[in-house]
Image (tube, rainbow, N blue to C red; front, side):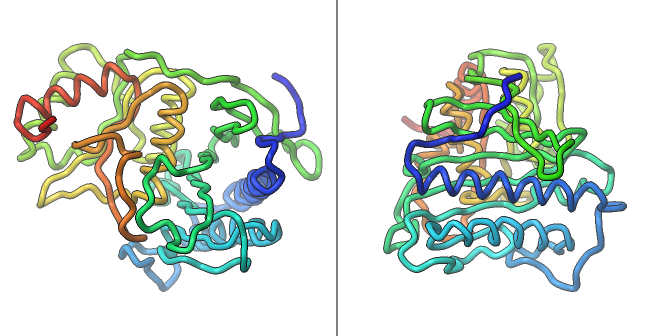
Length: 313
């Protein structure tokens, strides 16, 4: 492990945004550590209809508070508040994030996370842009340890940092450098499997994984289930649906930033038609299907979609 002052960009404003996020993650970690039973529900729902935990609201507040201090973030939008919130007139960046991914499993003490995407600010507030227009992304996990997988724009690589908080303020140390996802690996995390009763192509893929010795590693949280791909450097995470059981994953706050990190680490992403990053942003409530991970595994998945006539190239 290498102890260092984390500098993730030579561009001062972007570096300030990344530093603010790391500070927010430290505060989130401390809040969640003493969250008995997963915390209490508020009397509110977010705009997607999910009941909000007090921890959802507090983690969102922590991120927005630190980002506002930078003076360089014009707007933020989150899964809890899927609309653009003005932070600073003339700010250079927009940040979209899921403040607490996995809140439904927090009561069992499973790992949960914060997922973040950083974009250049523009007059259309991201509408019409694609995932490839993202500047940077990261995913912080709060579990037996707190770690963050992040794109180091300065060094052009995906890295993992771990929080050490023996001192009063806490500090981050580099624990995995230059993460590269191997093209093939027998590890799978299948989301929304209730739909495979009627979704024949998805069922065929899951059956293939089961009958060919793949290892099932699925917690029910997107952040931890995808972050294990970075740490093990192999595997896939998938979530598809049908009319009865559609995928509920959000594009701006979950699918786009995690696909960005996966592709930067030499993996691939796919939404049923093309790379997740080639999706045009049409709004702040936008949802997406997704499979990400080892490149050859994604190509196999695409071959099943072609076989069933879903994917036409």
